[in-house]
Image 1 (cartoon, helix red, strand yellow):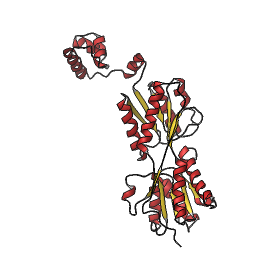
Image 2 (tube, one colour; image 1 turned 60 degrees about the horizontal axis):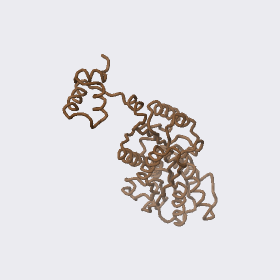
Image 3 (cartoon, rainbow, N blue to C red; image 1 turned 30 degrees about the horizontal axis):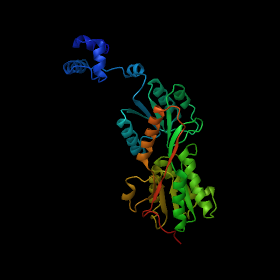
Length: 336
């Protein structure tokens, strides 16, 4: 059987198609009894309105598209909540997609957002040069770059102070007497990976310490990547006294690797992570970490999109949010 239409609803409810439309669009110009009758028939027929057609008729969508890079990373939990709260407060709903750092999946979801004629898209891009964004912009769908910049298009963006956060973390370790500090980093094709490595190197330079490739290991930004990178650094440099991991999942992997090697934290080796997660204070010892304003990151991304929708010709805004180093028990003085 074919799906019921608005005509079917109108015929069974004994009203016009226009009345059905007014009820479904919450128009105040419908008598309460008629509204109840129409909604009763809608439920009986399990009628589902064509939302795309409604948006095209209204010429304005109330749906925001959100494409994030790793839905399993707890970092995004608070970010998404921040976006949703702002969107809901302004009468918008949210459609969430996960690219899983896969450019082909990202390309597909961007095409879906364009086909669905969403109001705008908030994107955590898989690369800093993203050719697929042009499809959205060509159809007058604004894009906000969140957490990662997109350099081949002039877009509003919101990121955190990655370099400053990494600089603070490594400076803290140097001031504790550490001179052999390993860096577990993310791919350099994305903004956080590049900027957190830059912050690490800037701290070494500031304190007059040499930069050594043997102390830097890049891997995928997952727990297994951090685990493998930590083991590789310990193999290269058995006398490491500290590790700085560039994100939360890599930090977990590194901690697992240190446990395998029976190294005590911070007696044998100090650890600092980038991302302060709820579990960081519950570890033993508790984890020193760079905290990101995740909720505010999502909140600001949504606000930038709403401002762009209200004024498409306004100047481009590039927002950078501050990070905070939270010192706990995993970082201690360097061993002799």
